[in-house]
Amino acid sequence: QQQVKQSPQSLIVQKGGIPIINCAYENTAFDYFPWYQQFPGKGPALLIAIRPDVSEKKEGRFTISFNKSAKQFSLHIMDSQPGDSATYFCAASRGGGADGLTFGKGTHLIIQP
Amino acid sequence: DARVTQTPRDKVTEMGQEVTMRCQPILGHNTVFWYRQTMMQGLELLAYFRNRAPLDDSGMPKDRFSAEMPDATLATLKIQPSEPRDSAVYFCASGQGQPGNEQFFGPGTRLTVL
Image 1 (tube, rainbow over the protein chains, first blue to last red):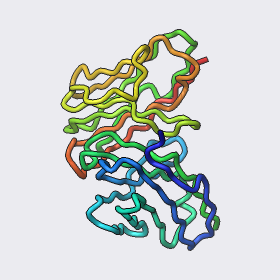
Image 2 (cartoon, rainbow over the protein chains, first blue to last red):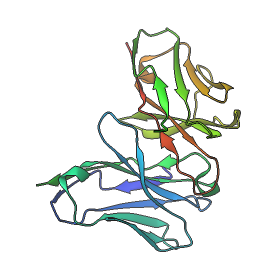
Image 3 (tube, rainbow over the protein chains, first blue to last red):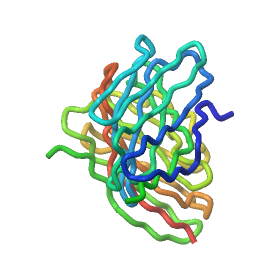
């Protein structure tokens, strides 16, 4: 049972465009929703995270939108740059993030110059 | 510059051999996680510890995998005997075990079982 579903699997966007990656979860006990960025040969690194008591969180060029009733959340990258080309994972956790993470399958993002 | 360290970075072994992967969490972090990444399954949680006690190992194949924390600065993941399907990148992550605290990932151990 895949508890966190992520789409699309891959995405190509022109520089300056706004890639959007979507995730849906099933377990209503999840209360922490982070996004991780991973470059080839590296471990995932936290980009931004949200709790279900807010509908949007913005940090720099990265924004999470959260819809608790639909059990969906998404990542938007404003003014995308070639350096943003990476694999992005959404995840969910209980315990406010203190517990282990359940990851989506990942989105391979390419930003073309 | 505090970071999670993992050894070895790469390991090639033959089926049936024992494999031990090591992780040094960030000093002061009381929670250690083990994840496995494959192309087919993505990132999966194997097990995690808090204050050196195992909290959840439900993601780990019990018959061949074992995880321990001999002390607060060392976590180990052992596979015995290894099988080709264990080939993957194994990540260790550490955190402070409080709501809202980030999990910091190590660089991973790439395991290839021939």
